Length: 131
Image (cartoon, rainbow, N blue to C red; front, side, top):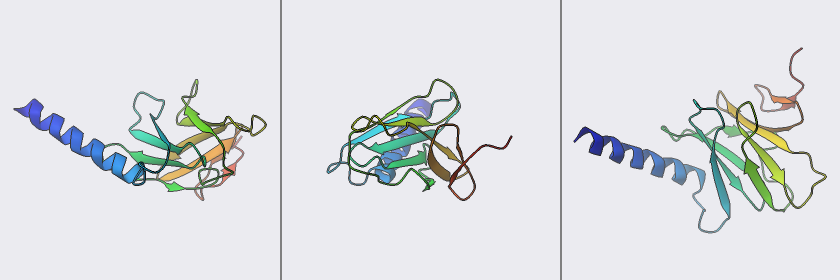
């Protein structure tokens, strides 16, 4: 009985997150990926056409406020992949290989997609990390 209730709660939580991340999923091409680290409860949604990234907590459906680099960009063919280390996802623009790959991460309710070694600050802006 307890397992049945747990599975039902998990299904409801999953439905809430998907609804929060992709209310227009029928009209757009979206890609979903969990955060890379084992303890991450963040699920990322990518609009493959615009590059827009959203991030929500899996169990609560609370979504991060998008900042620099996470908003829609030039139309293209975007993809998200897991990084080799660290947290978040890497957004690639397959249409424009000259555009730098961006590490998208959600920390403390903020979401940024930053190029190179830059990190997201409290104002959702990509900056150089502290020394």
